[in-house]
Length: 218
Image (cartoon, rainbow, N blue to C red; front, side, top):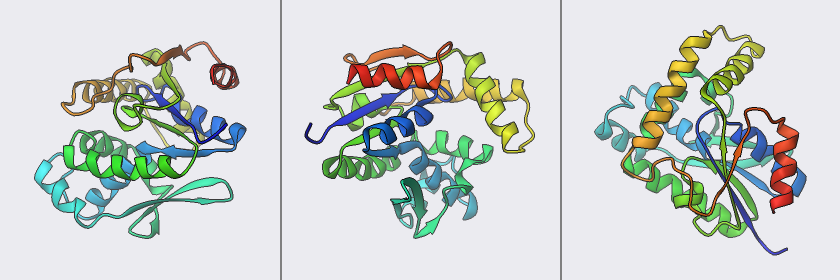
């Protein structure tokens, strides 16, 4: 098969990145974590006293931001101005910030250009909120992953607890509901299922079952 692209969209906590990473490994192609790119923008704003809720602030910050995706031992690393921030972008504050900056047109245009360039050169599996609808509208296979809010909150809670991060399940549920609202109501390229995407509800499926399903579809 020549170069191909798999687009995986869906709300926060539906299992997109876990599944996309495994798919990339199984198919021996590149995984592009688009959410990590928005997180890097949010991290830059937080560290440099730019208000990520203010469009003008974020647009000013954007002028000083360079984001690269590199691969070390088959793992994707995110470089922000040549500094590895892969682990720093996984905090709750950065999550909130990434949802806010992702609504800003200038940020999305810059990130989408980076994402499309990667897909031009490589076979990719890319996950996000608007991959099938906007970033890669010609992707060979489009998947829309969903899961109940309760299940998505539970997964996030377990993930944080495993990392030793104290958290509150109800609070996580509220944050996920807020992110869903932000993601699906933003003006530019909102979260929605592409007309030609195949929906998979992961609530009662194991990760492996979802991966097998997608490979069969491909």
